[in-house]
Amino acid sequence: MSHENMTGINQILPLVNISKVAILLQLFVIPATIIIVVLLGEPPQSALEAFEMMKENQILGLIRDDLYNILMISLYLFSFSGLFFVLRRHNFSLTFLATLFTFTAVVFALSSHSGFSLLHLSRQYWSASDESLRSSFIAAGETIISLNMWNSSSGYFAGIFLQGGGILMSIAMIGSKDFSKLTIISGITANGLDLIQHLIHPFLPNVSEYFMYGMGPFYLIWFFMLFKNLNRYIKLNKKED
Image 1 (cartoon, helix red, strand yellow):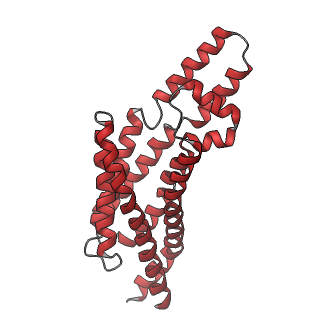
Image 2 (cartoon, rainbow, N blue to C red; image 1 turned 120 degrees about the vertical axis):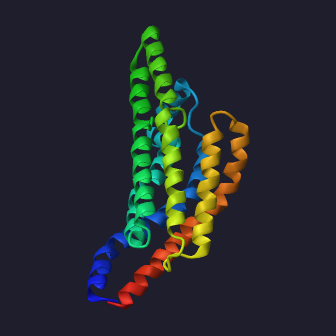
Image 3 (cartoon, helix red, strand yellow; image 1 turned 60 degrees about the horizontal axis):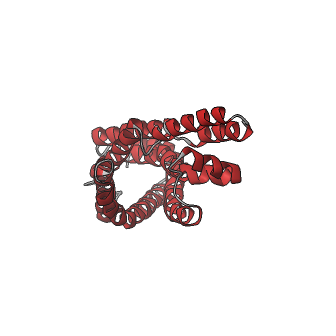
């Protein structure tokens, strides 16, 4: 390998290492999400339920109201940054589109998160003594929930961009010596199943649940293999330094 190539790789290794850590965190967030939903429950379905949840415990209320999903999605900013630099010379077009789609999805998801808005309204609701004023806070809370990441147009397109980015990034790995076939297959399968369930969920929510059961194990495999592949990439290039 030329000195110029090695210099370029050495410059991106710290970012690849950050990407590896982000992927490891994403791997742990998946079982953590299941534990949170089992112990705390799913995100609130009504404003009053959200207000009661926030009153009981603000931190646990924020966690229950999709904070774990926001963490998972935000970590893509770091995990896909490293993947972009590793794959940019192998397949720049697909890698660039995958990263662009993913970053767009993160922005959409963050903008549609309802947690802190509901926390603010909850404080207003419980401090108000007038019933008409409380009713207005409940109405505002219902509006916030209708605009969250599960019910809004921005949330819907965030899912399309996020899963679409995962599929494109996995396809971009085809032919690369840095990523295994299992990484590629699990990535396409996990993101593909997730994309299908996301597309049909507003229209066939009961059917989409079956896809959710299938995609979970493939996501675990995908993140584990990404971590393993990036760890190998870092070790090999450090040895050649």
